[in-house]
Image (cartoon, rainbow, N blue to C red):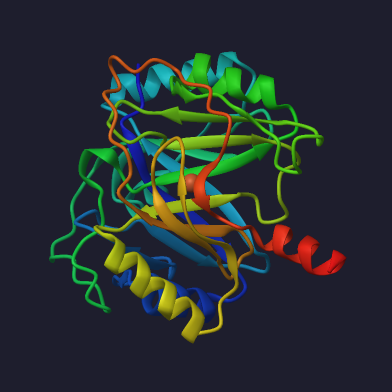
Length: 304
Ligand SMILES: [Fe+2]
């Protein structure tokens, strides 16, 4: 058993036009033909879609969809998740077709975070072309990027992701986000069976109102990250964290708030690991430099 990579994300929104603007005019993502059920689909490479945006009455990160090798791996995973007491709902034939996958199921982790697992995904019939000239996103066997969730029952949820699903621990730190005297918060950065430092991560705390913390897309270089940063400012989107470099996955980038409230991390130059030989680390800081978070800025302004 093992997880190959992050394949897609599914978002519910009452603002599909805003999401369209955000993805095509800030992120440089390509809009594909709508799904048969009317959902908007967006591409960053030759996968049929990476973002599925459903019109709804709420702002909600419905699921991160992870790929497994084949039908046997999918069945084994469904059985393990069911045995662990988490829900397993097979995709209908129509739902599988809407995702361009052979088969899959949806579930949630012990904190209620939405997950899907699938195998057998086809490729798009046409080449990827960014509407803003982003030459490519870094994907391939490292997948779409990563998704980050939060869990109040942190240890239980980490154990589920590791022991039941099969993600592996890359970096298992505790961070003092409020300064050295503040409480430390657990994080779990976990990899799939590919070179991306983490395909999923979890922070210790309540599930955010939007159902996720952030999604990360990897751009090919700092110029493309900088151009996206200019577009964020020009279109008036909120910068959740300033440009910076992470300690653990070495990504250089910034965070912008999506129309649904969770963030999109726009980064580049991410560390590629060897998943077979990686020894779990326990870093003590999030960032080498930069990454001033909006709440830190607000706290600073409040006391000055
Ligand atoms: Fe991230």
